[in-house]
Image (cartoon, rainbow, N blue to C red; front, side, top):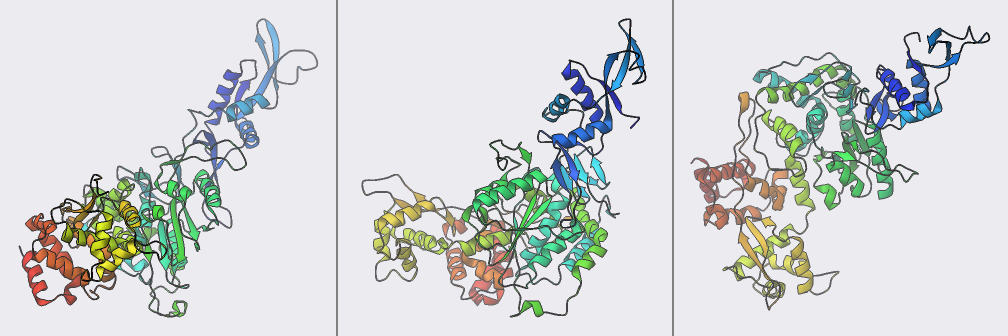
Length: 610
């Protein structure tokens, strides 16, 4: 206590408080964050993750006494000569008398809102991580360059310039970690790796990160084990499980507490109701979050959102706002009772992850560091709105290292949940038939054409689109539902609403060539991937996810239609360059070769060879 700063109490309170703040700046455990003084709350027995806790006025008083010795100047008298040091001021002998921290000083310092000399805390990092410059933060404690507090720092081996062999070895190690999980598709394995790389690259991601749902059709498939495995690598402990809130009001409270605590990651376990709500949607796309403090009318400070959110459940469902904010992991067991499965490569997976944690962390950072050292090569992936920065780092690094784009799992999820895709596709096909000149037809005229005897099976979905609760199809209902899909592109055509005429609102199908195609580059001979095209991704989102999931074309109706249009030089196909046609042909051959007819295969092979 002898090295405490001495502060003389006087009526100039601002000076007193300034000196107290200057003394507090020496405290290695005190930080400022979002207009509050905070400290790191050590992990407790039930939750192995340290959190950020605001410093109360009572606790601040205790902290101040550890760094400040308050004194008052008293005129020297026979009774107080032994009370402290005697000094001379203004020709008088004065005694420095120690005293308690004044309440007004403690309160004033606590409520200041700005403490320039006290270190800023950006967040907690549970393991070594990589920054925007590609540098790795690996020393435990506070990092002044990033404002992060690193709670654990195992000894890692990450080359500054990873070779192709380094990256391959890292990929093999990470693939091996997830070898026992029954991923539905390869993109779901990539989606399982995405949160691990997200946490390792969180300081570099100056923007939001998506929600990572882990879904399965039944219990015992390994959803919780997968999440615990990711956390065992990142934090060395089990995942902090959070019960799924029962209402939007409860979700709001939980989200606010999570952000205030600065938790690096949180798992909502076993979600029962549809995942979503305004609070979750907001925190998943926000860089800062502010809400009313529980039980008070006062708002929290605008706090940075660095938390990575997970959710687990059987048959997860999402509201429309949340559905676009996810990168889902889907597990599909091949057993009626998956909990009885044996023959695992890693029977004690969590123990394996804990024992090999340094090597696994090194592998993840080697992938990221390798991508940075290669110049952050752009893989020209489909856009993911609201998550451009995250995509630019995590998705690019994954695809560069040879894994599929995890975004494909999201495309499949949305395609499977969008029940109006096929009816709108049928509307577009009918519009091209009855309105080839693009002058426009009304909803009533669409229904009339769909009701013809020779309209075909697809027309039934149009009639269903115009019904509400089993009623007869109505132009009003159809028009409202078409309005929800205004300007949507399906199968190379856009649903356009024209200006209102004397007949009513007019609709037409307008050719909409897809975006240019870019190849995925093979950087350092690491990447081995087929070219991705916008058209190929559109196929996933318009019904062909059935074929992609099983890697065969079941019936082939949609593919047959698309190939027929291509072979007859439909507008969308005619608008493509030779390289775009070749890329599309290769992607179809790769996914559906076993179900193609001879003339279709020959047509595609001819395109692919050009």
